[in-house]
Image (cartoon, rainbow, N blue to C red; front, side, top):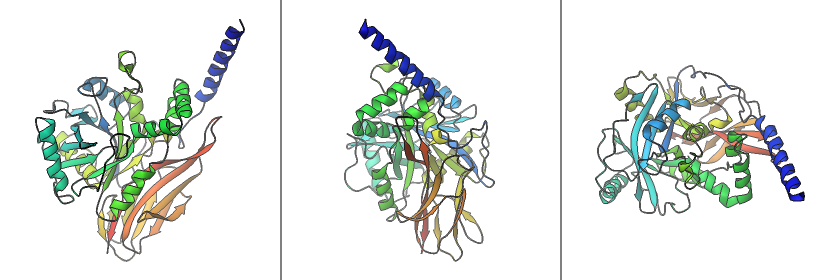
Length: 402
């Protein structure tokens, strides 16, 4: 009888606490039905590193596409694992959603994402794919204009890259959702289990508690960017199979939920028109050149954020390589004032050179170097957690040459 009473008390306490958590809003900016583009650029949100039931995922491509639409994505890139002669029938517009069919392939101890703008086959077997990838990686930086090669989760346990990063690699995942979850489990199994328990009441908070800064990936970015141009990406690693066999009962976490956590925001000078071939080339080139920023969308919609380097004649987007001129300025503008304390940090060659608590920044660029921007916010989480810093936005670097 006592055990029943104790269990009933704990169950009631659990649900009461759950109702308390349900009231907590993770957003640090006001939620909007439709966020506006910045005044001079167009912001399109997309997700990379997505698996379907053609490989390691739990749902059909059609189901995933529907989930992406519900998550209000503008573009989606399928990256099924070790899939050859990939079907391209889904590569088109589906309503307002652009779908691109890429692939993720085993290479040495790691995984590489490969996409061909010309839809050139990577091969008919893993051996052929690895030969193609080895050839691409051995080329000079940026030599291949029609393909995109990305190192997925460079420090994920069991799939870490060893040795020097090859020159032919376009970039790597700075953020990878599954890697963040794995690190949270290794850091504190109890805290991760607690996040799982509170998931039914506040899924956004559940994921937010797992967040930790990608310090190893940031160090790699700062090291490589001083040597050559490198692009960094956010990868969802979405498969809806976080729990073994869960897809036989429930897809967890859902594709829609995974798509809402973090994304890549491509910044274009002209808007997408609805013509697939032309729009696909725009998105591809932006991803190839680094004309985008990564955002933790569960903290708030960043659409309208802009960061440029300006001289007296024009503005240069993230990922640009520009020659140093007199009077150059790095300008940053947030879409709105965050509700929580925040700071915009300007980095030069990996070192912070400015910290500003204003929604707009104008930083003089007087020296050559590699500049990037990070936007951080501090949020008070519900009991038993406390205040914690989160990165809301990472930009790709600007390369200012002598």
